[in-house]
Image (tube, rainbow, N blue to C red; front, side):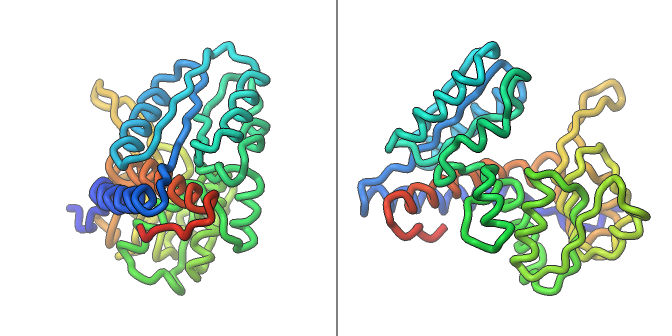
Length: 294
């Protein structure tokens, strides 16, 4: 029987978007500044199309300027780099997001590192990653920021908390570990090669599961009362139906944890809200304005 408090990422993200809308209204009225976000989508990936559509909708809802640039799957790397260069030089655009994955003929790393770091609202540019790693102010990847917001909401002050991050990707694992260090957590990064992975996870007050394997983290890996933030979004077939599941086995983990994010409805909604948050920060910085409270 589940005893864990459910961390409602959908409700938290809605509240954050409301505060962002207030910040955008303030920038418009006091500085005649409308933050602008441009999304570049190359190809016809269905999941990416849905995601881009949601981003555009929410960007407009909070009062920002939204642009969507769709490019053919056969576009060359030079075409995509030219598009990024154009957006880098467009003063109406403060945030640029190139939707991943990109087609095979395009080097994702090269494209990301061509984005102006001051407009890199995805936080993937090597300069922003480096600033985060060295404790400097930076635009940080959206999903890790969302994870930490939800963890703080569930646990309050994170200082001294024993945190285990399962997964070491540049997109979630590494940046979320850096953010947790900034919050004065004791951080362990675990992964597929970790010896006695269940034993390592059992020592955590806070578990961030970002490994990309369906239901890998089991309830008997979880310390009683721990906070579990599940970043995974995996499609599996169960009982003849397509189902979305996380990296944690929700049913067994919820019996032991103190609080847990569901999939869907946990970390997912936070990612777009944090993207909008980053765009407001980028627009303010580009114009030498203090970022409004959000």
